[in-house]
Image (cartoon, rainbow, N blue to C red; front, side, top):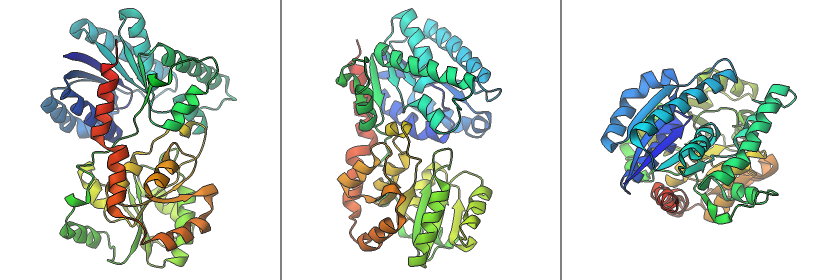
Amino acid sequence: MKNVLYISYDGMTDPLGQSQVLPYLIGLTKNGYTFTILSCEKRDNYVKNRQVIADILSTAGINWEPIFYTKRPPVLSTLYDYWKLKNAATKLHNKVKFDIIHCRSYIASLIGLWMTQKYCLPFVFDMRGFWADERVDGGLWDLSNPIFKTIYNFFKRKERVFLKKSAAVVSLTHAGKNEILSWKNLNIPGDKITVIPCCVDTELFTSEGVSLLQQSAAQQKLNIGKSDFILGYLGSIGTWYMLDEMMQFFADLKKLIPHAKLLFITQDDATGIIAKAGVYSIDRTDLIITPAARNEVPLMISLFTYGLFFIKPSYSKTASSPTKQGEIMAMGLPVICNSGVGDSDAIVEKYHSGVIVKNFNYSEAITAILTKQNDFDKNKIRDGAINYFSLSNGIEQYAKVYQSLK
């Protein structure tokens, strides 16, 4: 029995924690590992979801040690959170005596590196993308500001140290792994990096779990006609998702498919989405915005004709794996996405699972949609999701990473 300390700067009460942390760890407990999760929780989400998450983890036999995320002031709040995480990790290790430190992204890996040096424990650098570059590409760190320039350079130096000193590295994409291996003077073996994309619970995300009665009720509630062409967006808008481009794409599509509607499944405030639709002269009656709990998301996806996501293509996105791609494919539905983001285009091409918008050439993509609309095989798309994104495969890969640690 191996004791693992899992450190995450993302909260377990956040949607991301619920979809991209808990399912893996619950699965790994069945492989003989015991977990303590040390996470930073946002107060609003913690108050709303604490009991649900606590019950899930208690049932799975996972210990949870949450601390509160500090938002302000910038930089100093992160230093304060680092100090809290480090102190908590030290106290936990003195009590439990961990065998493995699993660190999700860069802030957590600062603690993992320190614990490796102090206690000679192996740590897993689960990088989740090129975090420092994401902050720059997303406009959160302006490198003309000397403070942000200093912070960026610090984390880029640490990135190399994490890669060298960690016992194992997990990358979300093959594109990200290849980029890392191309870096000069890094000299780490390729087999140190395991590629595990953002995986999907294909038992939850399956059309077999959605009845025609449920679909009909949802369509009626959302004012969707049986023959409507539904372009569906899943998740928060955030920094990276290109809302303007998606609205323009829908406006262009609507001219050729008059019965098209744009459906947003999101917890985000609808006001900004509605305002943006107005900029592109999208009729309010063609715009549907609704939240959904995690267990309701498969039903909502089942209403899509295509899933849509445009992500800002940038250097940092080489290492990104959109969770929504696997979830939509697991429901047997095709996606419409732009090129230049992680392995997304390669996945679409390999599994014939959608339409790639190259260089944001909307007319070419819309023509492809009109000509390919009946070409997609629901079963083959789902098989592709199971082959590439299945949670069971992800758990198996993580188990192999743990087993490789000395």
